[in-house]
Image (cartoon, rainbow over all chains, first blue to last red):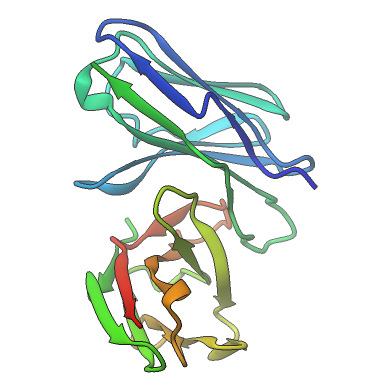
Length: 116
Length: 114
């Protein structure tokens, strides 16, 4: 079975440019999570969706960050305008929510973002 | 909100020795506790998890214990091998409602010396 698929794997761009990261969750999963990982701050939850609805975006650092989930099989994380301090690895994860039990989150391979 | 503290931040052991990583959580309503292993440049991968209705779970060389009263849980790796070297993260499911949200610890870098 295909896991969580993220694209691109690497992105290098200049500050001020718009960056769009993409994620396809595991088929059948109804929860999707966006994380940012840096050496200094570790693994931070940015936002998550349940059944395509954003539930908690308190981790989104600034208004420059936005995320959407137009359908059950696709989500985007957008940064506009990008800044050097946004450089990090961005992970998407998905899980199956339901039946009153928390389920494991499965991570994609991440997008390594470098803002010059 | 939920807070998860993880110790130690780094751990170095000789091959064949055991390694123990400990985590504490703050929300007594947390009921799910997964552990992830992240190798350099790779994604976090689930290695074992435990729910609040059991106190211990084993899978070959790894085991997890949970003390709900004290609100802490631990990862135990026996007979460590060089390929166990990685960063390990504990996590706790946040509060009630089973939203699926996990709060992660800060990570432990495990080095297994051959």
